[in-house]
Image (cartoon, rainbow, N blue to C red; front, side, top):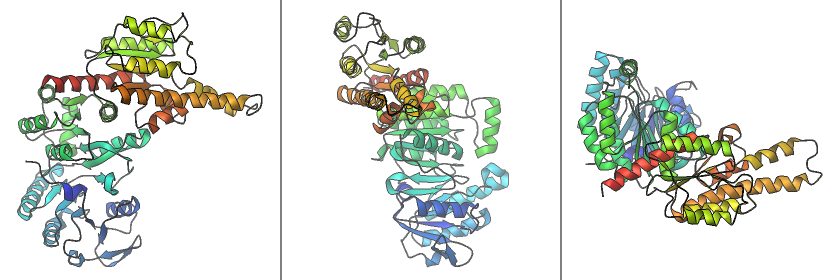
Length: 486
């Protein structure tokens, strides 16, 4: 049965316990972030004594919080104060507690005993207990930023649950950079009472979340986790990156979150059976989640490469050919004949479709549409965009701009770049075919009009063809797993 985590992610009001006037203390940072990111519910600051902080009254006792005025308590106080704090919180109608405080099971046997007492107490009081030793949570749909770090990510469709707070920040950084936003994100910390599976189950029912993204270091009950996520993945793609895959990483995980290591081969088998999308790195995990959140699921792995740059086409053909889930699709004869009408004779007449500099104003959008609607093409990787935008940028910086007709050509180049990016998104949406645009310019010059237009379309501009192929492989793998279950 799915636990009700709404008081955690959609609280009517929030109490921050352990506020401090020191801007470096966790209590100060959480209060600052809550007040700064648009949360509209009531906020209460609880400190050692009454006063004012950040123009907010500070109360000295939870008894000063009106009954049922807050549903979430964020705890930044030392462990020896927290059991009494939970009792007082429950008495005021608080329903969920996020424990930033560390010093529990990750700190040794005595900490583990204290953590066990905390869990038992929360269960007796009927409280949702998140953490301890967690970084916080964000819930952009309601403007909630209850975390001890930055950034506050844009609103989107990816739900994050992580046993590492730093990786929550990493995913939020990628979300901020790419514009592929976050629905909810939580640092599970020691996950003493609320497990990763609890979060994933709630995400599966959350109307704000389309994809889950999860970092795991260890599982207390791997079998139970597998059984639970198997019920989730047919409806909600779950991307996982696993830490502690080696003996060195397992030792580090034990001291980080107190997690017991899970045999990596066993975990890999469980992940495949359960339909988890397993990524090798944090970067590839975010890109897999971003792809699942923004691209349609393909019907197969037959992939076409469109390129204005021959070398990139060759490299991408290699990457697709090496991938066990993808195929470099033979170019259909009827599609070749249609492209013959649009490009000069020197084009490649093969897959990759190398335009060989023969594209005109409308060629790229027209070929994108032809390819995206063809029944023998399941997905497209689009390469070689951004070049005109680069040329425009250099021209703008030169001493002759805007004279000599340069203003007009710069405008043309920039307009075309935006048009290509918009055409990729439109063809994909219209024909339900994934179209992944890749260019190193996504990393080297995010201001390029093509890169910006891809971002504006709500999609990811991949920083290399290899990364686009890897993300497409995850998309195809998940689609095939889900189709096999029907």
